[in-house]
Image (tube, rainbow, N blue to C red; front, side):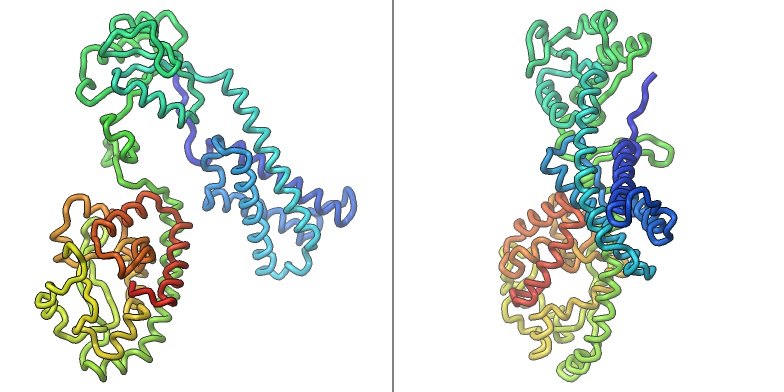
Length: 475
């Protein structure tokens, strides 16, 4: 029998419960220190409400903040910073909730500060102590795993296990399938058998499971089929690396079900539901605020645009969005009505080196006066907040190309649209108008996709405001 490892919250339920105990004990001791020993805070409504709220806030912070992500591999300093952030988030949220319900003035500030200090140090030492206990326990209870692989991949798999061994496994030996290396060691792990006698080794030794990592060409070999059948007869669990090993370290892969079928999914960037929820929430809040600002700007900008160039105030254009999906983008019109027709005539003046994007200094298509002004301060971009609210765009992402630009894309250029396009992005705040090499734009967009987190979005938004106010080019 084989017990599947817990995923999500369940795998860190012990830390969640321990932190919750620390929260309540810190609360109790802080109350006693302020109001007298053995007084019952749960009989006072404001403190009883606070105790209940802290429980829910703790769960909320864990859910949205991913407080326990990588907890078993964090060092002492990293753990202290993580506990400090967790504590501050709970204290600040509790203060806000008490203020909202009108009980902020009743709750003792001394109790709040004392509780925060006690929680910081108690949770820190409890986490460190529990991790030390788990390490001691795992050393005794690690599953004995036999690694079976080809010579070309043995070292790489062993290094990967050493750097990511959060499953408490112990590699007891290695079987090299394509050559006889019995008696040798690979990265201090003994080669215990070859393809000929590996079944005999499994039969005669303590083996909790067999991990098989081979190239795509060998996946249907007779030796492997015999191995899996024999392990099944012996009741030994087998683990087979899915896909081909060449892509194992270059993509994010996971198993899921599609239309009732179990498939191996490879993707450029794997994000959690919580991360997507947080990004969309940020987009909705920003979209609402930006749309209100757009309506205010319309009152002042629209008359100037119409007087200088009679016609529609807004400009719409088909752009290419996430995964090649076309959508209509909206802007305040900053160019004359024949701008698109004149673009072909001006292509020879393109400042972009490879022609993959169109940029031109002193573009004659821009409406004199108002057009230059709204582009200088990126005011023409504000109607795109409606695109953000609709879900076609995000506050932060990659620049959406025009259809003609999209049609000239090479394969690797397409990766920049693996996410929603954005109002601003990493390349816009890393040089903006000064970047003329499209490959550099693609490299920055790819970096954003690979390294994305919600904190990165917030930093880019703040840098965007700074760049616009300093007038370092248009978004």
